[in-house]
Image (cartoon, rainbow, N blue to C red; front, side, top):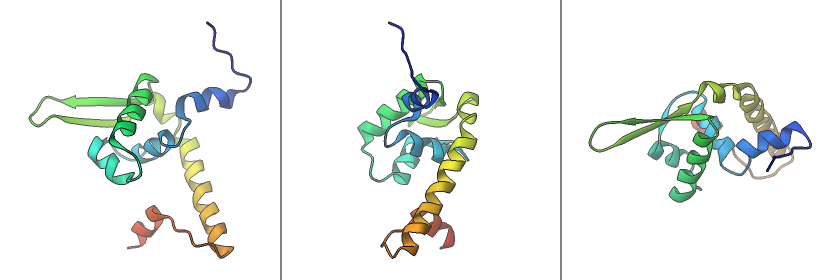
Length: 121
């Protein structure tokens, strides 16, 4: 059956939508990461959900999965060339989020952005 989208962003969200996929992609923008490294960077995600999201991103051709033939097994994820085409969008989403956190802080809300706080430490 033919998949029909009414607007382009639907097709985008079909690939990167949901709570975790964009976060995974943002973490992979700058370097390849192992599953455990991603899990540490995303403490709110379960191992089962992380595995599911990584498989879906791999199936969509947005990330690469490289398995090293060693004991213990080593698997590393990186953006594919196709996934790299999302970098401009991901960078803008991250920047907007940082500005949004600043706005919330200026409004007196008790929020923090760990990635920015870790850079300052």
